[in-house]
Image (tube, rainbow, N blue to C red; front, side, top):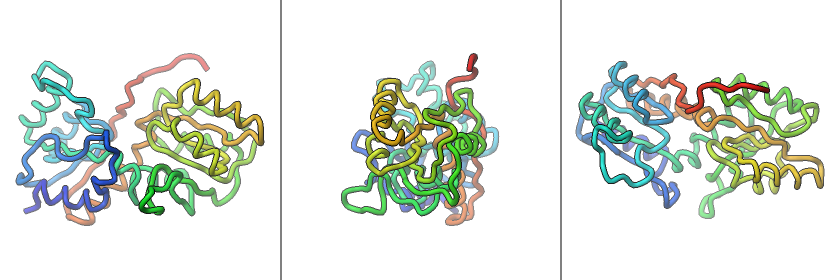
Amino acid sequence: MTTVADVIEVLEARFPPERAEDWDVNGLAVGDPAAPVTRIMFAVDPTLAVVEEALDLGADLLVTHHPLMLRGVTSVAANTSKGAVVHRLIAGGCALYNAHTNADVAHGGVADALAAVLGVVDTAPLVPSADDATVGAGRIGRLDDPVTLGEFAHRVAAALPTTAHGVRIAGDLDAEVTTVAVMGGSGDSFLDAARAQRADVYVTADLRHHPASDARDLASLSDGKPFLVDVAHFASEWSWLVAAAEGVADATGIDTIVSNLNTDPWTARVGA
């Protein structure tokens, strides 16, 4: 019998908790470590809709990227957003585990998965960890063949889940790009790193107006690079689910499934 604790051991060997940021929350949020596991579902967000999907599909362990309670809560009453998830998981006999920033930086983690699905090869950490240069935040590498920024943006759109956010681009669509930096999740704090590493284009999510505007002004003083490609936060991290599910399935023999629910909070957009 494989237990929740057994699966956690596999996950934490792949995504060591000690690699997480100090402010982060990771690990088992709901469930009994001794409970048996027969099916695992992977998802980006532990939303109520995702929990219902997991229960409908017979999962007894839900593994998410984002934590349920990143900010401290004082109540898990069933009429609160976090409490509703906790109560539904317990009633359905499903445990909840998450790997967040430790999965971002690890080998085979979020950054590697995003680079791979975009066709970025020969990758290295965009910002290496101080104690191990082979792991770290983001990835930088190259495309097998140069493409225009416009062609690359279409590649990004085709490779990632469709969202109302879409793919936003800053730069000359006809310019050639070869060197690509990627950062799953909110990445505007790494704009300077992408420029310092001489990336032609930087792919990330949640780029805010002022950091992006400042970055484009700085780029205009040289060769206009890095160009920016901004996607939905959810979409930038979804590819990791497939890699993580396959790794756990190979190590445990347990049936693993990946949620296809779009948990990006935006549902529509109008205009250009």
